[in-house]
Length: 269
Image (cartoon, rainbow, N blue to C red):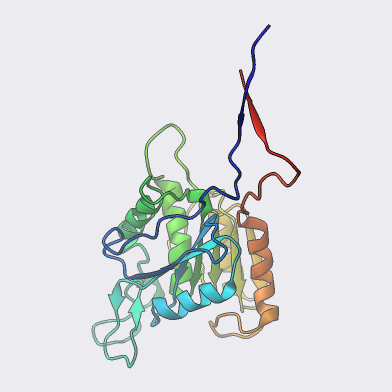
C-alpha cells in the first residue's frame, strides 16, 4: 500500500502578493511613476502611455483614479522632449520637422525607441521584478496607443527570453484613437486581446483602414465606438463603460483562497 503524507497549505490571505517597487536605477533611462495596487494584491500591471505633448503625471493620476482591482500602475514619460511648451511635453517618436512643421504620416516611425521598450519589458518580467508578460496590460492614447500596439507586435515577432515556447502576448492592450503604423503584410493572429476606442464613423474610410490593420495583426479586437471627430480621451462614464467592461474580462483576479471552515492540506505521495 502506498503511504500518503499530508502537509498544511499556506493560506493565500497570509502570503505576500505584492511586487517589489522598481527603483529608478533599474528602469533607466525611463522617467516613470509607479503605484502598487490599492488592495495590496499586485496581480496585474497597467502601463500607461500618454499622448503627444503630454507626460507621465496626468496618466499616472488617471491610472490611480480608475481603481482597477489588483492592478499596479506604471506611467511612463515618452523619451523625446518637445521644446518651447509651457508645461512638460514629450513625444514617443518624431512628428515635427526641425522647423516645427508637421511630418507627413508616412514619415512617422513608431519603432525608433522600441529597443528601449523591449528592454523595459524584459526587466519587468525578470526574476528581480517578477511580473509575467500575460499579467502586463497596456493603455495608450494617440501616439501612446500606437506605441502600445507596436510593442505588442514587436514582442510577438521577436519574443523575449529563451526556451522552446517564450511568451508572445501581453494581458491586453487598450488603444484610444490610434492604430498601428507599420502595417503588417500578413495575418498574424496575435493572441493579445485589444480594445480599440474610436470616434471615427464606422462607415468612414479611415475607420475601415485602421480596423483592417488591427485585425490583420491581432486576433481579437473589440471596438468601442464614441461620437465626435477629434482625437480625444473618453469624456464621461458612458464612454468609459466599454473599456471598463473589456478590463473586467481580461484582468487577472487575485486568488482569495479557501473560503470554507478549517484548514487546507495537501496530500503528498
